[in-house]
Image (cartoon, rainbow, N blue to C red; front, side, top):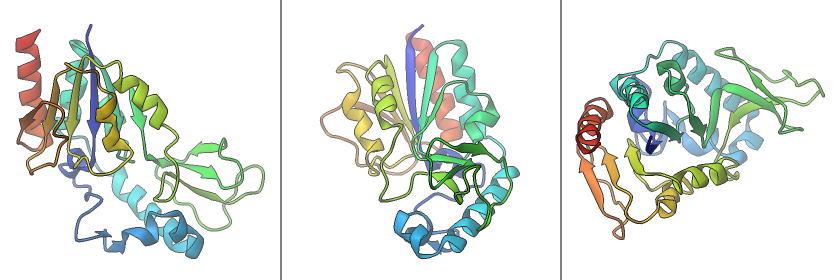
Length: 229
């Protein structure tokens, strides 16, 4: 069974009603991105950051996967599908995808600021200042913020390097290090890019564009892949 590796971004979740990260000129749900999604923002105002992610969790609880998510699950019948997502939501999990790497963390989890190994699944609950881990350290969102390393990047690069087919869905390919994954894909591996908007993709790789939103685009990808099987 061929290995289909899929890199997903906020565009796939937009059809489920979740705002994309770079909407409204640097604002995310009316918050300045750097205030709520950077390590400096955390140090400046922990209460604001915690409130922001509490709101995102509450929003996520009612969000449902769309045709893009479910289409990737359907492809598991024909391919060994591995999803590398930049999204912090759990819509791939809700849809039923089995192999998922979250590059930028997970919204439904928190971790200790004093021990990175202490990670807790809190679902859609809120956390506030004073909520601590078993060692007494404050809990923070299990999110990779601007200014922090991306721990899952090495594993994602290894998976990308073994791809037989690679697809990019709903991401601009300008956010690094995730955008650099395309450099790990073996030469000759077919690459598909699903996005309704123009994307500045690497000129050194041949890419087949599907200029559609994720829901319809994944359906077209499925047709193309099954014809080639």
